[in-house]
Image 1 (cartoon, helix red, strand yellow):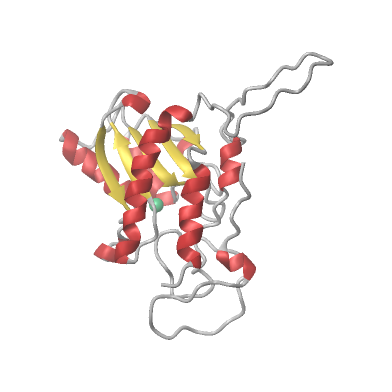
Image 2: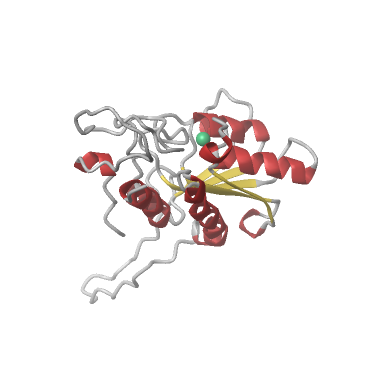
Length: 241
Ligand SMILES: [Zn+2]
């Protein structure tokens, strides 16, 4: 367990944006929504998502059961390994590492480091059929979030829009648009890393994918490599650009 990185804006050290004059204003005491995809020239929104990797890693919102160590009364406590096995999340680590690799390439075009992959049928052992990274700045497309880019590539790969059997793996909790896209794509499952407490739509602000009014509800798992996914974002927003 690691200490959750504090969002830059919360400490008043919000980084300056990339060029151009910006209005002066007091440091934002909160992180507003919608800042998860690109550096925003508005100082009130430039601090990025309020990622909570440690909360995600706890699995609290997923209903995942953590292994419980049963120690007989009077027995000496056993030393705990540095990282406990997590049978629920560990199988998804390789796919999340692919998504992280995508995310790391995003800042080359000034985009916020968020990455996604789509796995074909087979759960965590499914083939990577598509990748995507946040490329809103690179393309000037407001919908070019990593998830949408990856879902579109997966549909091209499969030759149709139904991604039944597939899994979307993404480094940050999807926003409302991407949660909706996940539902509409008919993916079986969505796996994400860090929680986005300020704009997340898969358990944080909304829970679109598990809304019982929808006729398709993907399975959701979060907290896979959450600390790493969150640190990538907080480092990006803290670094001078
Ligand atoms: Zn999105």
